[in-house]
Structure formats: structure tokens, C-alpha cells
Length: 71
Image (cartoon, rainbow, N blue to C red; front, top):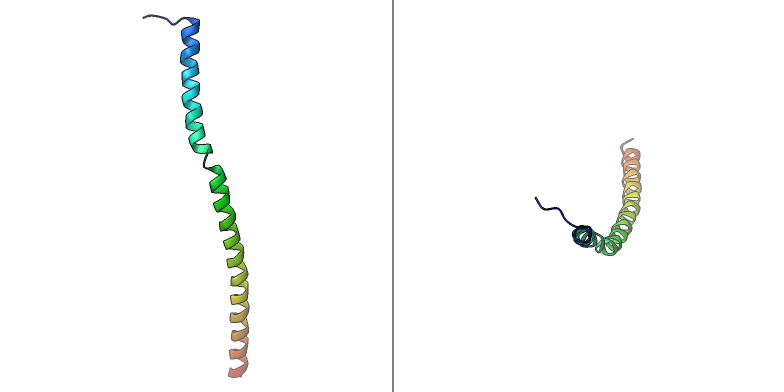
């Protein structure tokens, strides 16, 4: 088995690091787009929560009105 010289080891290590950095970059490059989409989702959820509060209030009020009519 042939051992590598220090320079050859450095080259191999450099190639390994370069490949790993490429892989990391592939994952990280999408983060800004994911963040923009997340903000839209958060906004949508906030609006849904607000709408649900209104629906809940309307249903509660209708329930009270029906109860009042049945007495």
C-alpha cells in the first residue's frame, strides 16, 4: 500500500472540503426563498386566526339567539 505525501494529502483534503462545501451550499442557497414563503404562511395563518375569531363570535351569538327564542 502506498502512502500519500503531505502535499497529496492536502490536495485530497482540499477536494473533500470543496465537495462538502458544495453540498452545504446546495442546502443553504434555498433558505432566503424558504424564509419569504414562511412569512407568507405566517401572514396567512394570522389572517385565518382572525377570521376564526369572527366565525366563533358569530356562532356563539347565533347560539345565544336560538337559545333565547326557544325559551
